[in-house]
Image (cartoon, rainbow, N blue to C red; front, top):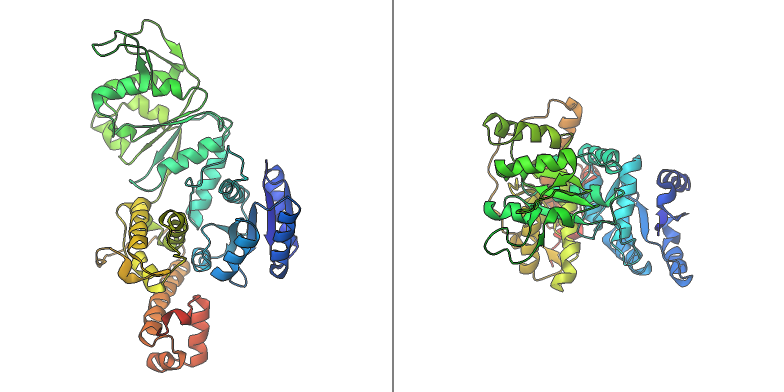
Length: 452
């Protein structure tokens, strides 16, 4: 069943925009101002038609208390923050919201955000992605990713996903599957790097009784298990050459043969591959079949490493806090500015997977309700020379650098002076009103820096 969506916004016209973009993906789209949101959520529950998703306007910036109240009044309703500009991720992080949609709205991104938010409630359509299958990010890269997923999901085109380990390649594959006509069929994962070479063929294709010494009965492989669904070949760059030829045949004819069998079998399956290797280099070195490379690289998708999208770190940190707080039984609901700055200062060679691990560790160590810098186990950041992205406008890059400096400077200034704005202004040689305006613009809460 399509979700019911509540638009909490200053302008009623936003409801019309959301309804038009979502179309049949929402059973109903209702608008209300922030002052009336609580009553509307309660009314929905009382009528037996609770809302599944709230699209919450980021202006004025909501506090974690406002978000928690909406979630409670809505019976666990999921919140998606609607924000514009480069500060979208930071606004969502400060509000304690794990999902954000950029304004102006993009059809594909809005549809995916609403679909995932609805899937995270017990009322959601079971065909939607699982609660853990969340693509989180902001900025141009995530918009492009959603657009490409929307392009390819409805087709049976073979997709090749490229990216470093830990960037979320399997999540992209699952999102494509869950958004495709095959969503009710199996999604089968084969990690080509984790299965020993002698066993990989048997795991993938299966065998018949008597095919080898221990083959006491027929065995269906994972390819047959994925029939009518999607087979995800993770780390295909590690696949042995002999097996590559057999996978090529599946792509060409949708046929395969079990080990020891005399007959071919047909299979209806979509194949998605992923790798952290440079397949062009492997082909040149003779370690990957060129014909297979051409077959799998029909629709390539590239995931950027986390170090190239540091603006996503705060959003991801808060997402993982929400993910693990119930599992750990801890009342942790926020992350201090110093802790966020510490996460942002590290380049995370293990990407999102490593960040998730470090947030999980910090939550285990944390003794209060807020993760502090001392709770984080990360190496000290090394000085690095970062190459500027010359494909982007000079003014945009310059403003990002200024914003990052101001955020770090103000955080440390308020920490040293325990949130006292007058003393901080004198130390910085600034007018108090100007300093206050900067603190407000960067969304810093002075109360977090005051002495207990």
